[in-house]
Length: 222
Image 1 (cartoon, rainbow, N blue to C red):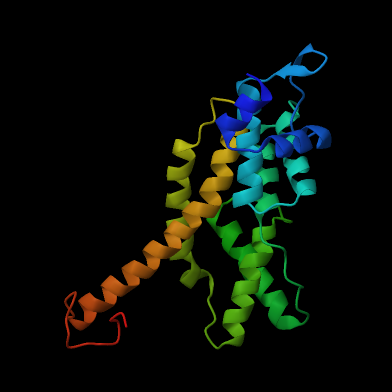
Image 2 (image 1 turned 45 degrees about the horizontal axis):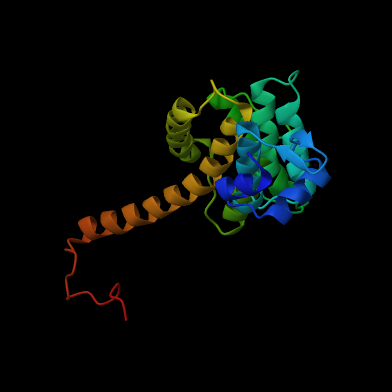
């Protein structure tokens, strides 16, 4: 397909495609003349991945280039490729607090993951994220220990087992990474919304409130 067809197929404007070509994010097409190149499904997949990293993952071009380099490195295992994408879309780390409270929170995070038997790198960004949350909870007077954290961890484990079951690992690497990025970000939002709806339902059940009950105006829309 020509670049105009590639643009129509992917929804990426032609000037943007040309920019990705100049930056080396998108491989060159097959040159058929001095002014024309042909593009194929590999280019469609690559543009879909770039869009997912840019629009869903909110990554800068430099980080996108790093993920794409991992995708293209055939010597890297799929675990490392997915890990590169996962680490890239992790939130920017907050400054580490100093003091004993922070060290206890980080040790609690490490202890939980070790106790679960999860195989994670000691520098995984999510470990510091977890420690930050535990640190904040402790300072708010609501500390969580390993026992309190375990139900959340088990729920996460069950969810991830399902997600890996539908991850397209037998196709092109771009497709697997695109699915991982979109799933991690968007399904995370879906999970948060469902959790809040479940909270509302559990509260109504606990307090004996029926939907649309006018006896309680606290949740009515203005």
